[in-house]
Length: 188
Image (cartoon, rainbow, N blue to C red; front, side):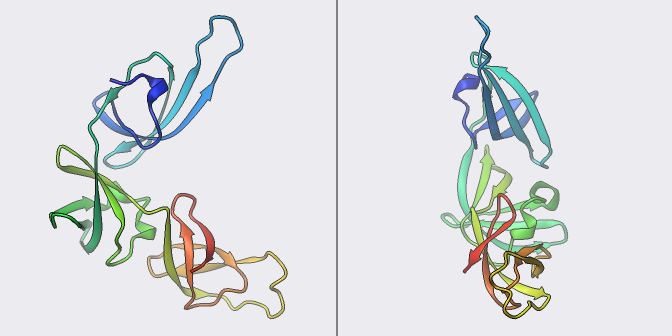
């Protein structure tokens, strides 16, 4: 069992019988004598998502869960179930849409380089790559000679994702999108 001071982003821990994936750690060091460093940790509950936040001192013990990461590719969707295939041993995993709700706007047919998070051979959720390349399906026409301004316009993608892109981009262009922030990065 690791101490709270040793927990890192991406670790899987067990709190009150629930699996929690560490998303963010804020460290605060009080200036009073004898005060202990506080670790405010934000978690994602697995499976199903949901946020959870708790504060620990550096000496608090947290129950560690054995997490296995496997590279998978997305195969198909059937009703509310999404099927992924392990790229090494070709075993298939099925996840309910509720378990991967935050990742669905970036999930495209045949997508590779997805990490499946497994505990005891059971899939809990997936992690998307940091960036994905998607094609703009629909956007309003941009103004000519307006490229010097930093204006943006809404763009829609095949997965239903809508986000702001620079005004000079047109439908049919490939762009890179950050899956953590959900923002446009650059042309692909």
